[in-house]
Image (cartoon, rainbow, N blue to C red; front, top):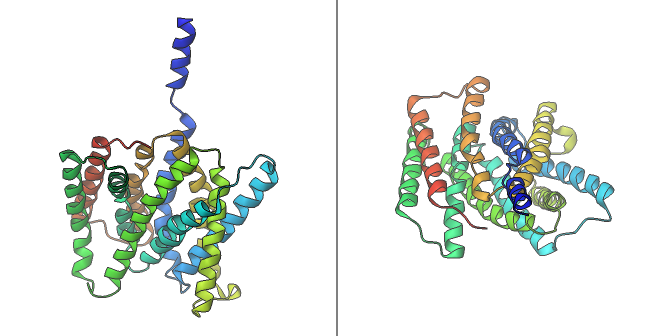
Length: 310
């Protein structure tokens, strides 16, 4: 009996290699999408329309394929959860981050996104009345100082009252809403609701709403007038940024602790910075590297000091 219990304990503690593989994929793929988004939205099509088209295509593919394969086994999420998560994950987070990188460099935008674990800690603290240790406060101060270093060169050559500040605020707000959406997504993934079908519904809903808003505001570009290069960028963002990366993210979130999954936010800026350097000519300065290291070190220390319970 003891041998059986011992074997069972070993099986339970055996690492989920598929979950870790999915986490690695998220670390790399979402780093590349920052650069792809930055390039795509600078080709003359509204950033919000790029995000809307990407979401609608990915939502149709996810929902239709899952409905066809698992029609009798699907547990549909409530409309309340779907609307809330669509607003947090896509209307606020995905769409606004795509819009934000139109005004700030893609690598810098990804570093702002790297503060997402910090916001996750703050939101968990507010909602569950967790005490914040001195180590967490020090990590927050490190991260803030690192962000100042990272943005200092751009602020020197930018109009702080113009579009740069606007893009910066969009990116920060999208990071906060993404952290809040992660909390709700984690809770939904722990239930019987199919998280992939749920995320597909969220994409469809948010993409449709964005298209309607853009059309009513006269900002919607007819699909036939969208350049082939933009369609190529949308295709990359849809396949690798939405379908593959989101599926990997949900799988990792279901099988690993939320704070462990959030380490992708530390890796994304490094991936984005190097890709931006080689493809878009964005400079990698010693100050930028120092600020990046401080941001990553600060947020990492927060994760180590505060183990989130979900």
